[in-house]
Image 1 (cartoon, helix red, strand yellow):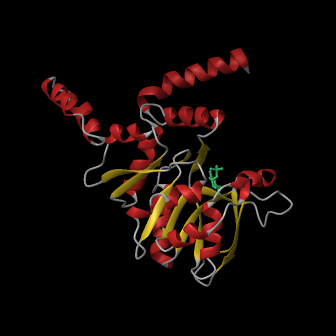
Image 2 (cartoon, rainbow, N blue to C red):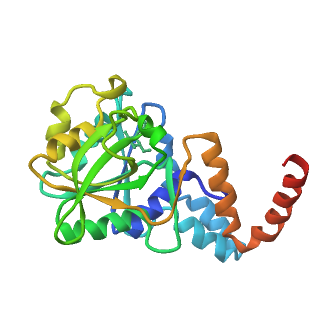
Image 3 (tube, helix red, strand yellow):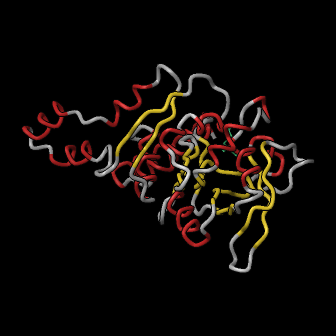
Length: 263
Ligand code: G1P
């Protein structure tokens, strides 16, 4: 994404929300993701010797100070709920944990998406899920939440369903890939069977757990990009690049020319 791997944005967002321990759930063979976050002492030395302070600072910030990064393997692609369950050894039942789906990017100038969820968690004491209003025709691509405003103005989730058809959807409030969840959810995830698409769905686990422990929806401030799609990734690249002074003018010029040529 412009000048950093997509996963780097997720790490920075997590750090900004107060997360100190990062667990990357990956499939076998993808463990090299962790290498991106390991210190490169040779490169650091070279940059230091060359007086390249700015690059050195950026290199050292790849894994934010005070955080640790670890891998959890998901041996088989059995679904998002299963992926989260694969990180169970890192999650204790008496604490909350966060989940970021890095292909969902949220760009804004204020607090990051996860920090917005953490603030709501601190206010409500419950689990929190990022949501945004989506095109009602697209409910089949999202978890969909139905909410009720409680006395404090927070949106308590009354029902949650994974990828319903537009006819069955309880609303058009789509789940964005940001969650703050109770560690005890892991026990529920261990028990639930396959849901939509034959996969073990995080949404189903949360929906079940929620019957005893309230969860809240946090509408996300900022613009979301689905970087799991080519178009979403392209749009995000353009918009992120336009926020960078060093790229903005020339990119705008190019876009204007592209519009004339292809528009
Ligand atoms: C996952 C979740 C879904 C959520 C979506 C957001 O689906 O299961 O509830 O709305 O991420 O991107 P996926 O996109 O992995 O199919």
